[in-house]
Length: 300
Image: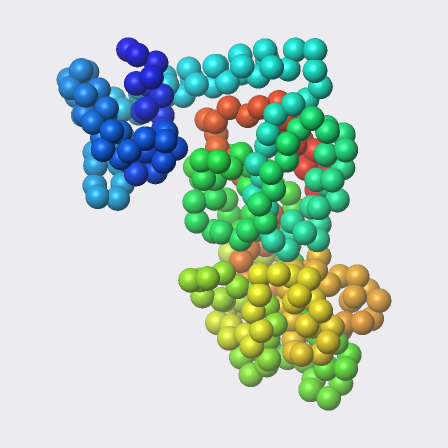
C-alpha cells in the first residue's frame, strides 16, 4: 500500500470529518473524498462510514489507521533524530492553557522552561475551550475539569478550589452569603464560558468527589469575564462577591484584603482538578516530552 494512502487515512481519522482533513492536508474536500473512494475501491472494502458532518472508521479502517499512525510516528522520530544531531533541544511545541491558571500560575514555569531550552519554540494559547481540546495543531492542553476525557492521556497536576470572597469594604455593609441559595441574590463576580450554563457545586467533606456532592445552584453573575486579573481587581474594588479559583486571590486573602465565606464547603464551577492532556497515539517530540516533565515537576 502507498504510504501516502496510509497518511490520508490517519488525517481523516484524527480530523473526524472530510472537511477538516482537507484543511489539514491543504487540499479540497472533493479531492480528499475522491482519494478515499479510490482507496476503498482498491482494497475492496469500505474504510469509513460517512455522514454530512462526521466520518467513522470501519474495523478495517481502524486497523489501517493504526498502521499509518505507526509509520507516521516512526518517520517523525527519524526526522527529529536527524535534525537534532549535535544540537541542543530543538523543535516547536504548541501548548493550550486556561487563561487564568496559565497567566497567574504557569507563566513563570514556561519562562523558566524557555530559559533552559532556548532552541525550543513555545507557542502558548491562553484559552478556555471545553470542546475539541486537542485540535490538530495543539500538542499539549492543560484544563480544569472534574474528570478527563477517556480518549486522552491525562496527567494529574493537582486540585483547584474556588473561593467565595469579597473586600472588607463590601462585606462590612452588605454581609457575605451564608448559603448557596443566598448567592442568587448577591452581585456575583466570576468567570464563564460562552454557551455553557454556570453551575456552582458544593461538596460535603472537601474532597470534591461526586459521591460527596451536597448541593448545586445555577449562578447569575453581574460581572463575567475570562480574564482573571480583571476579576481580581473588580473583587478588590468592592463591586460584589467573587467566585474565583484560589490561585487568583489567595495572597489577598492571606493579607486580609479579602474575606471569605462558605469556607466549610469545597466549591467548584468547572471542575476541581487540573489535568495535562495529550493524544495517546500522537508522536511526542523530545521538546514536548521535556515540557511535559518540566510542568509536572513544577506542579509538584
